[in-house]
Image (tube, rainbow, N blue to C red):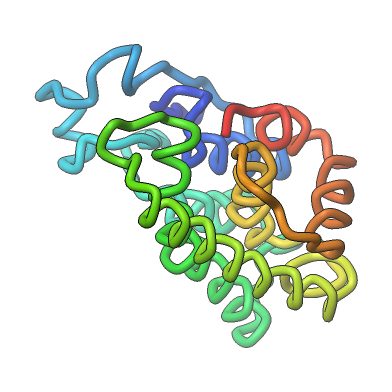
Length: 207
């Protein structure tokens, strides 16, 4: 059985858990990370030298990096319905997954650390205002994309890209900051909430 190492509150672990739910992949999860077993032990770092969750073990195969993991699961466990094999359609999915992991992630970093984690090192008012503005700017990009597709981030059908992006939307709404009116993002949030996997690991999860 697939083994998932990482605490369930981690947004990146939740990508893996939601992907497993979408593809009906049975798994066993173990708590690793802050508040649980340390990822800085020699045993864990032998699996992931970055000392970060999630890590999966699929038999003898070990993999880290959450987006790489969910791509692997889709390839390994017949996920063609959400990760299309056709080159251009797959590239579109990869594009939005990579955008979430780079541009969108970077845009929320300061605001999230300040307003949710209450980090003492992230309490500069100017930097917070800039961070909130950047996060809103990136969510506006997503709002325009969702308005154009009318449904999901890559088109009319749910895809693997909606897992990282959908979790980012949960983080956006759960962070206590002023939220501009993005109706397409709000509709998307409600649409994703019809999916059992998102209710388990997305909207009801810890931001």
